Amino acid sequence: MKKNICFIIESMGGGGAQKNLYRLIKTLQKENVSISLITFKKNEKDRFFLKKISRHYAKVPLHSNNLLMAVINNIKRINTLRKLLKNINPSVVISFLPSTNIISIISTMGLRIRILISERNDPDRQSLKIFWVILRYIFYRFSDLIICNSQNAVKSIQKISGKSDVVYIKNFVSQKNTKIKLKRKKVILAVGRLEEQKNFKDLIISFSVLNSKIKGYSLYILGEGSQRKMLEDLIKKLGLTKKVYLPGYVNPHPFFNSSELYISSSIYEGVSNATIEAMHYALPIIITKNQEGMNEFLIHNYNSLIIKNSIEDITNSLCSILNSKTLSRRLGLKARETIRKYDDKSTEDNWKEFVLD
View 1 (tube, rainbow, N blue to C red):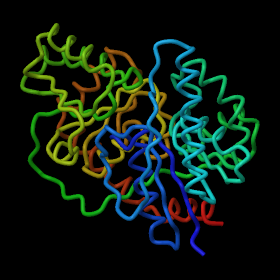
View 2: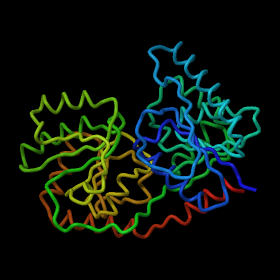
View 3: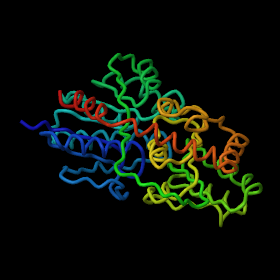
């Protein structure tokens, strides 16, 4: 008898959680299972196309201007999701990201559905509205299993939930047939949602300082988000409209393969899929501290530069790599050498153990 599995996530737009969900579904499709996917956004273009799954939308307004409307909209989300789950009748639900996790837990109560939830960031530094912080403390304990992508997150979630059923499963990291271009453009690359967490404001200011010292470089930031207008205004203010580009959600691989350097300026981060992709392409990598999920992969001055999150440190580290081809080449080759030691078998086996058993 086929096991009926239902995944729930806000959207399948670009992002690390979405990429890992895509890889997980592709893994489980090799088994004797039936898969459904529920999202709360229908109009946003999917970045990850999935075949042979049942697709559903719990289309309710996600953003509210005040607390009352937020409560009303989330009650609507719960009711809509609950009706969908009764119709789909899954044996297990797997939810991704905090607010969706909470909505999914409440929606499955009393339905005799096993609920697994996945945290993709560092809960100690994650920027959540107090509304969701309180609800996470209340409802996470009612899940059957919580899955984190870093050991630090496991410890934090155990404290938050009061549960011992919190496990670590590393991200999918392997990438097939990554061919590296020997000749690269004078491009500094960053990838991520245009949100406060990613700290692109400081990165752009740092690039402005760099641009006065080292000429000829451009900065590309791939992604979309609520800070686009603010970042565009900053770029204009600093006179960088022909130097800093925000192309949106685009295929990142040509950029990984032609850029000279990759930087992650996040205030906090779990396991960064974009940074892992940069490692596959042998890019020299700069990351800011407080990205605990990357501690398994990156070592300062061996295969990356790990720096304080300040404009001065970001600028100095960019200058260090761009001024030294020897350092740039060594960091890039060591990053690629490190990530190629990993495969996804343990990740696949762990997910199958918890989902299928």
